Length: 159
Image (cartoon, rainbow, N blue to C red; front, side, top):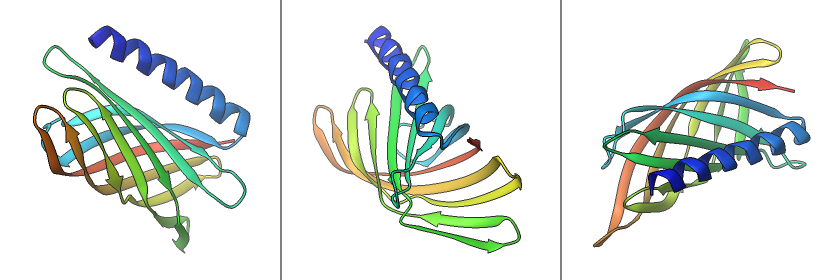
């Protein structure tokens, strides 16, 4: 099971990187933190990128926990419904999203990320995000609701 998750995650990240490069938007890295939740995952490294069709900013993220006790992959897709500059080079974004945790148990649900972003240099964005998540755990037994509160701190480079 661990090999399938690792190989699947690598293939997904390579495909996602190719999609971001061809879209000419942005890609970056983040440290994800489960603040409240059932898995007790703690901090995990991940990837973050932006794919933006005309007028619809969609953020795609991926992260993984690869350890002896726990192996899982987290995928998120968020729509930045509201994005606004606040002061100087600081801005905010918020919108609906979906998440998927490929682990034992498998989880699927909705989320609402709220993020602050700052652009210290023109191609570089530093962001801090928090997202409440509500989903279903497909284990034995199936559990609902699965509530978690996750955060992320990272950088994105815009092309």
